[in-house]
Image (cartoon, rainbow, N blue to C red; front, side, top):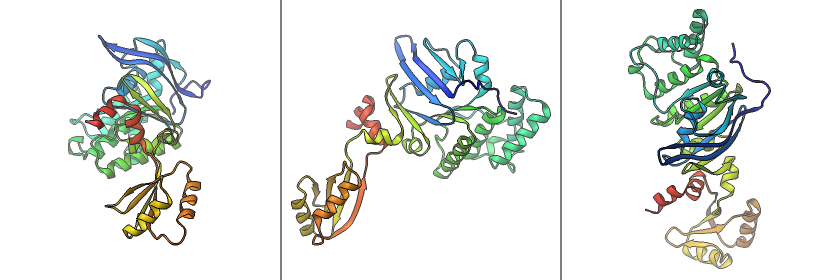
Length: 319
């Protein structure tokens, strides 16, 4: 069984002019978004930037004050019921019931989705196997580790075969191994054609998983693109050269006066805006007489992007 989707569109989410305010506090201030089917789209931003509010609006939990939005081809305002039938939501906090066993949580979700008894039992069994929860199926989630509980939470989200899943900070509080496991699950879902809308505080997570990223600040999108596109916008790429002695460092600095030297670490940093071509030029200018002990190429990462484009983050960094 697959959820019914509108096959006329290849756009999973289309948002124009989305606005939301609570009293005088504007949470979303004219957000425009287009998310393609089968991609992982990450929403980044400081706390209070509006990420979770976008998820709550697009998953029909709260209404927008203004703007237009479609989800899997269905209009958010007039076809909210149809939207709910094709999406799944995993929030920041686990939705599992600690008084029920893992299996009972899944079966209950199947009942809420109006699946037939045989269908919900079969689906629950399938998901318990998929998420490596078979041995814990008859135990209550109160006995689960954090990673197991998050896997059960996501399994519950998948009971209705959603074609689009909102993951609101799905790995918060997980240890590195459990986070890697969750990443693998997300990649498998994408290979199956599921669209993922991900909010996360972990920039490394967005870099590893996202096809495209939108960065929000004060309710507006301040940057959007693939991870590589966003990183290329930020200056600061450099080649880092480490030398065995101060004489070698001094000679390299003489040959490349545009570099920045660090006498304590015997390091010279040379701007690198042309990739491999710059590296070749640097090595040619050094020649064979200057001994380089270590060489590495550094490019801006999403942390640099985040601090550069979010005003509040820049303020926090400067404090």
